[in-house]
Length: 318
Image (tube, rainbow, N blue to C red; front, side, top):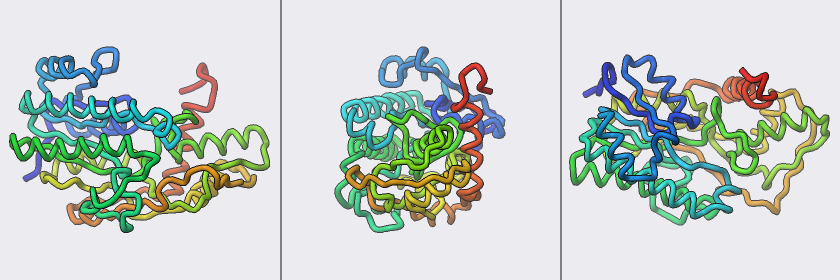
């Protein structure tokens, strides 16, 4: 049966992040009351604080999009933060939701939880079938724990907690800090800055051969709302396009959009991460949802958002 969000109190945990803010925007079409709490009001790592807040606000549905996220450099340099913070957020929010008898909860996981050498495209059943990619294992372990906690609460308490597995995201609200950003945002920044400097070449980490799948964050938000309304099961659901491109192809796509005609130099001494990551999205398609935004269209709008909100001086940003 379809779960209706109309008239419900819906908490978006992590509403200031890229995924959370996109979900909050999408929920405006659902006729629900959107609940949010900034870090100054609520530290999601603190169990007692979260339990008090949930008991007072009484959300009926929860989208758990809050997480500490980052690319290879951030994961490698701050492993304890990535493991502790994400575990603490998940346990605090999920336990508080169970205690308050929240009607439904959707937990956002990450495709990095799949084994490094998982068969491609990766099906939901590939989880825990092999070793993780070492460059992001701390984040992956925490996300796996969150997914398993959703399953455990379903089994023991009958909670309608589900998990969605988004692929690599890009779009409005992305993190453009070179020290902690993911590849899509980092590439946009590097290309734009090379263009601004008039540089004729640009160095890229790795060989350029790994293949990645990219999903516009607004599509992730739409899929998350779709799953909240139409899915109730213990197995997580992959959310992506089912198509991938090499890092080299991504770089050339973004350069073309930005109008930069320089050369890319690939530093093969730097880590590549997983050789390929693309999702099998047949389960989601069978439920009735498919991605619609093509890469060229999506990355063009993402780059335009970056130009308006990030690249210009603060006093000139929209």
